[in-house]
Amino acid sequence: MKELLSKIIVGKDPVVESRIAHTRILLTGQVAMVGIFISLFYITRNLILQLNVSYHYHAILLSVMILVVVLNRKGHHLAAKILFLTTANFIIFLFSSAASYYTGSFIYFIPIFLAAFVLFGYEERTKAIFFFLLTLLLFILAHLTDLYIVPQVTLSTRKMFESFIVNFFTASFLTMLLINFLIRENYYYTKELIQNEEQLLEKNMQLIKINQELDQFVYSTSHDLRSPLSTILGLLQVMELEKEKGNTGYYIELIRNRVHALDHVIGEILDYAWNQKTGIQQDAINLHALLTEILTNFLQDEKTQKISIQIEVQPTLEIISDRRRLKIILLNLLSNAIRYHQYDQSNPFIRVSSTIHQNQLEICVEDNGPGIHPDHQEKIFEMFYRASDKTTGSGLGLYIVKEATEKIGGTIHLRSDYGKGSSFMIRLPMLQ
Ligand code: ADP
Image 1 (cartoon, rainbow, N blue to C red):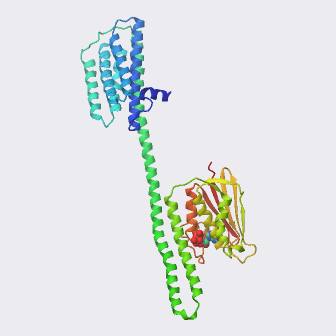
Image 2 (image 1 turned 180 degrees about the horizontal axis):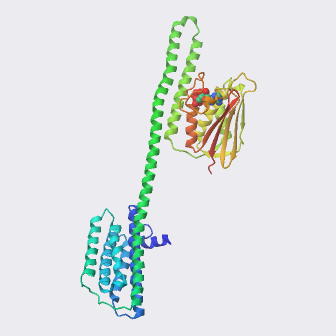
Image 3 (image 1 turned 90 degrees about the vertical axis):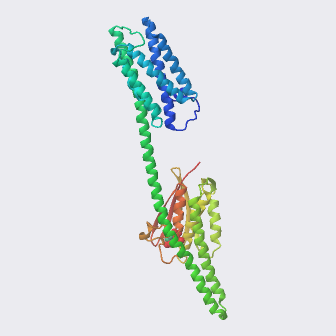
């Protein structure tokens, strides 16, 4: 019903610059329609009562109000408003100056006062003030002088009462339409304002977080990048001093390890930056194949071969997610599980399993390695947090894992029994 009315008044695809302008156009159409209703009511009533009065004024009102609707619909919004207010003002003046107070026709002055301000709004307030003054002048002429144009009609008390009821209710309806517009606009503006404020607050919090991270980032990365470089420089010096001893191979191996560590840190920084900047992709992924691809590189290492790696994922399981992010997540978790494992313990294992639960994909990366001390468990996902002094990593890995997981709409939780092992549980929404 509301949509149909809107289509009749505004047309199918109106080009309107703002929501408030659209509502104003709708309102102009609605008040013109009330004008059509009023004129039709009086024409019919006068015909039934066979009163020989003012048909042409009602006919003028009817035609002008139809014209207002047409102009409004055709996009001549200003012309429609001016035509509506001018005609409505003069018709109200004509009838309220001719009719008895008891018909209540003067009540229309109230909505017409309001209409000037509501239809033009603050942006066009000079036009609104002009019409307000016009209404004021016509009210004074109609009720404080003896001026009248339409011949005065004498109605029975009953007919006067009927007119009063119709005038009272239609004028009240018009007033309600206009006030409702003001209240609604106020409501929407307040809501928008609150929403903007909330967004601003959220942006502010994000900025504070980013700023803190940036401070820490600059400090930690410069340290992490410099430390392998200083070690390499030191090793080169020793190599030079011990040239003759013939153990260059040993130092080259040490340097290679440091270069790898450096490369790892740079790789993590790149992953971090990429995750922050890049939008989410939706790829069809075979989870089993992805895990095999990740593990192939690790399995070339002799130490890794000592660990039993079990993949408990259905080979046919296909999911829709961001492939590169999921790879970063699993690669980091598996790399940690391998790096921190105790190779000399009995039955060292790493198990990756997946289940679908309440339309969520749960991936669990579990190991029976050293576990993480309860003191560290809460902070493990923080940027540059290392849970032990022995670690050679940068402390960025799990932070990137958490950021990437959240970016694809998931969550990550750690469960660890210190001395017995750790398990990382990722929950991802199942996209169709
Ligand atoms: P790093 O680059 O130091 O590995 P991470 O953010 O990946 O940084 O991990 C943070 C810390 O959590 C590590 O320093 C390590 O002490 C601990 N950790 C991570 N995964 C495991 C695991 N599977 N078993 C034991 N400790 C772990």
